[in-house]
Amino acid sequence: MKVVVLTGAGISAESGVPTFRDANGLWEGHRVEDVATPEAFEASPHLVHRFYDARRAALAAVEPNPAHRALARLESELGERLLVVTQNVDDLHERAGSHRVLHMHGQLRSAWCLACDERSPWQEDLSHGPACPTCGASALRPDVVWFGEIPYGMDLIENALGDADVFVAIGTSSLVYPAAGFVRLARMWGARTVEINLEPSAATSVFDEARHGPAGELVPAWADELLGAVRAT
Ligand code: BV8
Image 1 (cartoon, rainbow, N blue to C red):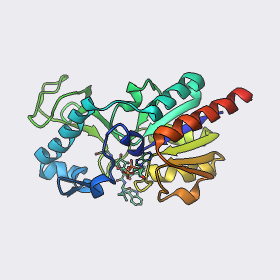
Image 2: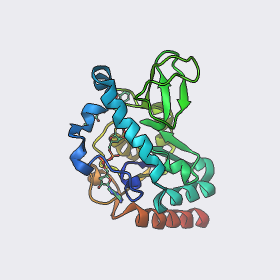
Image 3: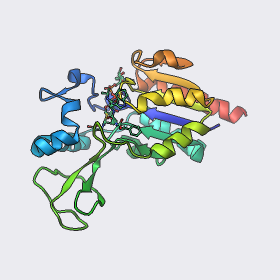
Image 4: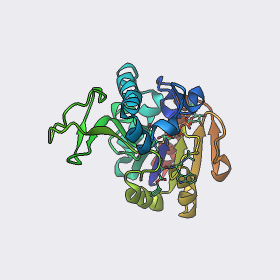
């Protein structure tokens, strides 16, 4: 039984990380889609750094919730048969104990040097133009995938979707591509598809099954059921 889990902002909502739909998708009055772009970084790097510095700093005040921990438990049983693909740039999956996590949209706690192309673990602000730990240049940008940029790990993700017996999407509105298209690929390649979300999403009708409610309650129950099925085979 091979399982691919796609997570979105909704899995971290109960930990206190605002979703993109919260605040009507606005940050300080800016549409997120307008701040999270290479064009915005070109035009006003300080504004964009402030956006990511604020979210990076906020990570210190949040903890994983039962949904993150249930996926870590699942990994401890399924091992290589489970892959978590997350759209989230927070590190709550890893802090819950998950190792097989692919951040397709990057991570807040990583900085990318535009001078030497190296990526470095990063905890602090970037707006003051700190030096790259590798080359010393002051050319660091947040290591996140902005709108119009190619997501990370697409080949690995498509291979995993091709092998999956089960595909589950947790806490995503299914509005941002290519992630929102994964359910169709998984179905096309024969996987059973399940949506776990607080409310119906833009792709609910595409899934074989939809469970609507808080991830903190539904994901542990779903994980226990899946482990029961795995142990029975
Ligand atoms: C690309 C990182 C080419 C930065 C992000 C096709 C059609 C239309 C448009 C496009 C298309 N293809 C490409 C586009 C353009 C664009 C796009 O999709 N635009 C949208 C706005 C229409 N896509 C791109 O630009 C992508 N790049 O396409 O390159 C390419 C493609 C394929 C292969 C090669 C090349 C790059 C997109 C990545 C942008 N970066 N994040 C940052 O974080 O600042 S996207 C960002 O927004 C997140 O990572 C995430 O992906 C998205 C937000 O969505 P969700 O995570 O789902 O969050 P949301 O708030 O929307 O929903 C939360 C859900 O949780 C809700 O449904 C809610 O009900 C639920 N919920 C709330 N609480 C709970 C809960 N559920 C359970 N329990 C709870 N307690």
